[in-house]
Each structure stands twice: as C-alpha cells, then as structure tokens.
Length: 441
Ligand SMILES: NC(=O)c1ccc[n+]([C@@H]2O[C@H](COP(=O)([O-])OP(=O)(O)OC[C@H]3O[C@@H](n4cnc5c(N)ncnc54)[C@H](O)[C@@H]3O)[C@@H](O)[C@H]2O)c1
Image 1 (cartoon, rainbow, N blue to C red):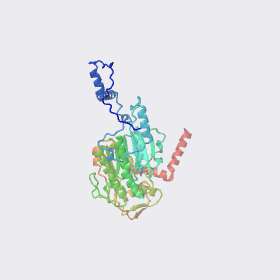
Image 2 (image 1 turned 90 degrees about the vertical axis):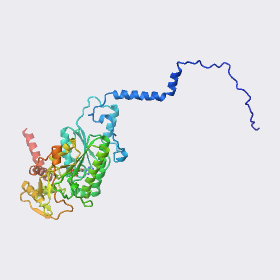
Image 3 (image 1 turned 45 degrees about the vertical axis):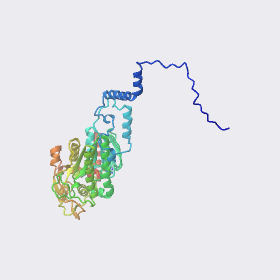
Image 4 (image 1 turned 90 degrees about the horizontal axis):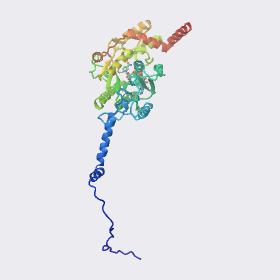
C-alpha cells in the first residue's frame, strides 16, 4: 500500500482552556535581563576583582633567586628573531619549576639571597678557573659549563663538595637552559695550537656557542660578558691599539677561525644588546699568563717556561723583535669582574701595556729560571702579528682598573706551578712539610 499525502490544514489544534500565563513581576525582569544578557560583563568584573586581589598580595623579593618566580620574556622582539634559545630542560631548570610551583610562585620565607648565581662557560680552563676562585670567594654560586677540550677538572677540583659550586660537562655549541643572574662566556680554545686543531669547531664555538649563551641571557634576563681578544685587531696598523680601531684581519688565514670567530661573537653580542635589550659586556683580552696555563699550548710564555724548566732551548720565531704585552691572570680576573659589575658595555682592552720583544721575554725567563738557557731561532708562523700592546685608557677611566702585577713579579708564580706539574717536586715538598708538621704537632 502506498502512503497517501493528506491535507490537514483545516484541522484546528486543540487548545488548553486551563492555560494561564505567569503573572508579570515587574521588579524581577531587569535583573533577569542583566543576568541573562550581560554575562560577559560579570566575567570581566570577576577578572578585574581577581587581578586587584592578587596584585595586592605581597610581591616576591627582587633579590629572590628565581626572579620572583617568573620566567622573563620581557622584550619587544619576538623569540623567532633570536632562535638560538635553549630547549633542553636541565636539572636546574626542573628544580626551578618544582620549587616555583611548590611555593606557589613565591619564595618561601626565610630563603635569603646568597650572592649571585653565575655561569662561567670555559670555567675549567686557565682564566676561567681563576675567575671561579674569585667568585666563590666573594660568596656567589657558580656553575661551570665546560666540555674539557682544553680545560681540566683538576683546575676546579678544590671546589668539589662546596654547595655553591657545580660543574656541568657540556658543549656550548648545544643549547642549555639555566636560571642565572650573570654569564661569563669564556668557552673557546685560546691558544693557536688548540684553536687551529679543529678550525671549524673553533668558529662554531665562537658563533653558535656565543649565540646559545646570548639566547640564554635574553631568556632569563642575565647579564652577559664576552671574553673577546686582542686578535680582533689582527696585525694592527695602529699602535698601541685603542678600542675604536677596527683592525687589520685576514679573513681567510689559518687564524681566522679564532680572529673572525671572536669578531662575529662581538657582533652578535652587540646585536643582542641593541635589539633584544641584553645587558652585555665585552672584554678584549691581551696575552695573559699565570698558573694553570696549559703547559704545551704553544703560547710564548708557557713555551719558554716549560722549555727552560726542561733544559731545552727557548724557541724564538722570526727575528724575535715582534712585541707582546703580558698580563698576570689575577689582574685580568679583577678587570673582568669590574667590567661585569660596572655600567659600561665596552669593548674594553684588558691587558698589561708593558711591552716586551720576544728576545726580552726570553731574557726574563732566563733570569727567573736558568741563566744558561739557550735561545734557538725558527721561521715565523703565518699571520703572526708584529706588534701588540693595549691602550687601556678607557678601562682606567671608566672601570678604575689597571694591572698591578709586573712580569718579573708574576713569572715566578707561574714557574712554581709549572715546576710542580712537570716534575711534581713541589707536591712532594709540601707533602713532606705536612708530614713533618703533623708529626711535630
Ligand atoms: N689567555 C689569554 O691570553 C687570552 C687572550 C685573549 C682572549 N682570551 C679568551 O679568554 C677565554 C679563556 O681563555 P683561556 O686562556 O682560559 O683558554 P683555555 O683554553 O684554558 O680555556 C678555555 C676553556 O673553554 C673550554 N671550551 C672550549 N670549547 C668549548 C666548548 N665548545 N664548549 C664548552 N667549553 C669549551 C675549554 O675546555 C677550556 O676549559 C677564551 O675565550 C679566550 O679566547 C684569552
């Protein structure tokens, strides 16, 4: 049977005779209207009340070690312009978040600021380890980040067990996230032997490593100090070198991985400073010497000292008339710390203006170690600058800094450290002294 379509329009719908509309309540109508139609208004009022309430709660201390429990993204330039920021969660980062949420975003009562939290990249190296000593002595908490390419654990081992000291084996070419107040960025092989060993890695360290550390500085609002070098002046046509001199650098030579790498690192530092508001500092370090230098790193002072101690001839490259200035490491560390704590970006030359020819240096080494040490001349290496001497007027005027230790005062300190590491005699001596003292006491 097929279905039929039937017109029912003429049928009227049944109506209930009992239906009566609800009585009209004139006083309820506007309230219901507001409740129904102005819900958004109520949500906004609620948000406003909550904002006022939470902003009236006592704020976290500005000194608190977690920046008042907030992550800092306070800059006008979007992160996509500065892509090198770290993505890895480290132990410190996890601890930060755990503590942050446990404490409800506030620093627990009784937690006092304990100095600053400072990262020293390359802190297991020669300069870095002396800087770490000073920072720890000042009461700061220090995290050393080092891949031990030229640095060694022995340089910082005396801090193991100190709760304010941490050591992370890490290559700065990879990103890293840490909550810190200051970053001293030293990581980079500094001697020609080491930086020429793998030039591509050297330039990666200078460019990508610096980019990563600047990204970290931007992200956590830390102050950033770059240890650049006098080598940015190349083979200088101006003497002595002032910070305004732009240099005479070979972009394709065997030293370029270091010279040009550091120049790019300076460029990046200034771009992050100008563009992303990172508080930046740049030091241009001139030849520095002292205990804990790598013994066979090819740098002229360590070469001469090690050769004189081993009774080998002192090798002078070229005619020995090229000049260098030599700064004792404690002077440099003082300069770096003043720069970091001061208000000036730089760049600042940090070096000792006392100028020595290689022959004169060899003579001081002879006086200090062995007057009979012989001098042997060899052909000069490629791109070896003829003259290097800092003009430190700017550092004197703006940082109130100048070197205090002369070559004749500093060299014996280095010699006793080298003697101990080459022959181990000092260790034996001190062991004997300790034994004697112990037995007599
Ligand atoms: N000593 C000087 O005379 C002198 C002169 C000019 C500039 N500088 C600069 O000062 C800084 C320190 O120099 P130094 O004399 O102590 O040299 P160094 O070789 O003793 O120290 C460099 C440290 O950086 C570490 N390192 C290298 N590449 C790394 C990487 N990719 N990731 C992590 N760590 C890395 C090394 O293991 C080492 O501990 C360097 O940046 C150097 O360019 C030093």
